[in-house]
Image: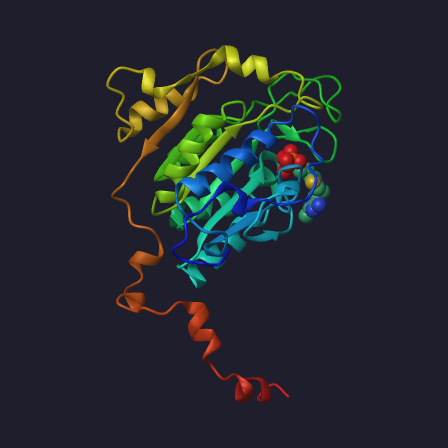
Length: 294
Ligand SMILES: Cc1ncc(C[n+]2csc(CCOP(=O)(O)OP(=O)(O)O)c2C)c(N)n1
């Protein structure tokens, strides 16, 4: 569908490709919630770029309509940020695993948060490197027995939502792959946020992460809407509730700073310019420049 004013429907994001994830993988729910959020925000497929990292999460790249990119492990964020800066008429939603994001790509996470690029980032946190068959990641629980740590993981697990808050993230949410309803609403809010919207999805991995199955999360998660008078513009409060990852795990939009300006909006040289960088490059004749290298 390429009509700008047509009503966006769920089947506009349909893909005929067959899913290859394991039975009960959290990626099914995440993929469905993303489609629902794109429909709810009335974004037609030709107005969105869905950028995927490498991993089980990335195998969702051809299971959805729209412009899609499937890149290098750990590098989805610089690609997504570049696309958003070059063409701010496109909504950009990037997805990646915890392995990619918190190891090879952690520098990109840090600077994407700091720069507040106008993108939505969905972290598929299944607590391991799924596609390469269950090595420990930075969010694997301490003590868990994994393929590369048969005696148990000896390092502390990382609290990534708190990490992003400490970096000054403007939108920090946490949700659960088993709750498509909550995920859809959070993705929708993230897409509507102007700036870097970080969404951690606690994802069950039934094949390789035996410590935190679907049921483990079901017994522990709660929604911040159940906290009386919870104010998600209060960063100290958000930090406090984001800390516990063992007993009572907070989900919802944990922190939201609506006043922080995104990167592009702060560039004085781009103020009042209606064209995108993509338009401008298209209009530039580079023949002479190229000839100068011969
Ligand atoms: C630069 C690079 N490093 C490593 C790999 C190998 N590799 C492919 S998928 C993967 C694990 C992915 O784990 P994660 O990012 O957590 O995503 P998941 O599969 O769990 O969704 C690795 C290490 C690669 N393809 N490219």
